Amino acid sequence: MNGVNRFSAERFSQLNALRGIAALTVVLNHFTVIDPLRELWRTPLRFVLNGHNAVILFFVISGFVLTLQLTSPEPPGYQDYLVKRVCRIYLPYLAVFGAACAIMLLVYRGPVSWAGVWTNSAWDGRIPVSEVLQHVFFVGVYRAEHIVPVIWTLIYEMRIALFFPLLVMAVRRLRVHHALALAIIASASAYLALLVEGKNPYNANLKVQWELTAHFAGIFVVGTLLALHRARWSAWLQVRGRKALVLGVSLALYFLSQAVLRVAPSGIADFLFDWGVATGAAGMVCVALSSAHITSILAWKPIVFVGMISYSLYLTHTVVLLAVIHAMPAANTAWLALAIAALLVIPVATLVYFAVERPSVAIGRALTLRRVLPVDRDRRRRGESAKEPGNASAVQSPGRR
Image (cartoon, rainbow, N blue to C red; front, side, top):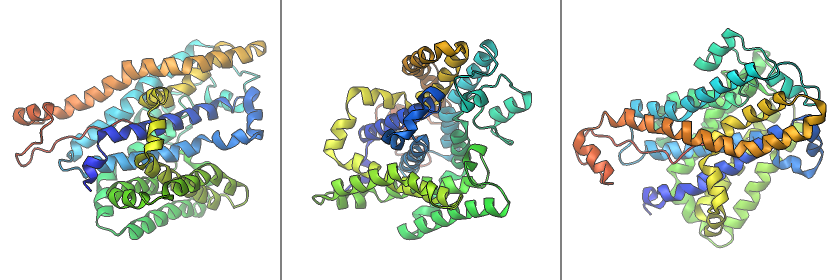
């Protein structure tokens, strides 16, 4: 089986759709930490409201997609790869961060009594210059829940992006079980380091602790292994009954692994939780790429559309929610504010996708295309493969969360 052709750009629609669904769960997560909706966490819906699960899925998918780019017949050079990652992740974030700061300064800046702790912590009306610099340059000690509360995932993505090509090179030289064992050991070592340093492992990711870069890099490796050995697991799944079995186990791990947080000590629980979810996410990715039935479901146009705007949705939904709440702080407007915010998240994400995200991706393409010889550029535009040695073709990313 030709792995590159088998998992061509057309096949990535399933991964974008998964990203879209995952992004919606993050939206639901942040809406339901607002006090009027918090009771939903006492219902069975709590299993689909955990946005952290979605982040782990994002990381597995990113590891998969980036590995396919870096191991393609004509992989991008490191400089081109990094330029595209910066344009893809950082430029849209920077625009949304600037907009969030401006809105925060314009709306009511005091506490909103009906909204709860998270809301008043995320937008407390204070934007110190030091914190602006931290959020712009991705350095320092973060209040990751402040201003743009999803920033912590982007920081880890950018950190891992810096050394990910080297990580892929190393994993390619290892057997599957050796690579996976080393990823788990690195992950466990990160939590052990936190404990040794006297840091509380609980929600350490929100503090963007440096140690956890190794942990989340291990999650990326799961996606890398899926990409490198896609022909093997795809063939294994073709046996009758295996897709259904893998999907069932994967969904159980993905949604129910959070139960370990209630019974295991902090640190150990977080470690086991993330790896349980990562295992479930890996199985979901495999089935999504192998099952015609799942593919048909993920090809539903609304899901495809949400997948297309998933990164913009992920970036902007907390800004929309917090802006509306602080624009309507009176207690008698609580439900109206939540309804308006819910109605606005998709339109705002769509606007940001077309006005910011797509142009940012185009900038990345333009900056890397300039380093390609004219004859090679013409061949790319015609969809042909470059034959001259040394002219590495930059493989385009099918999209991100």
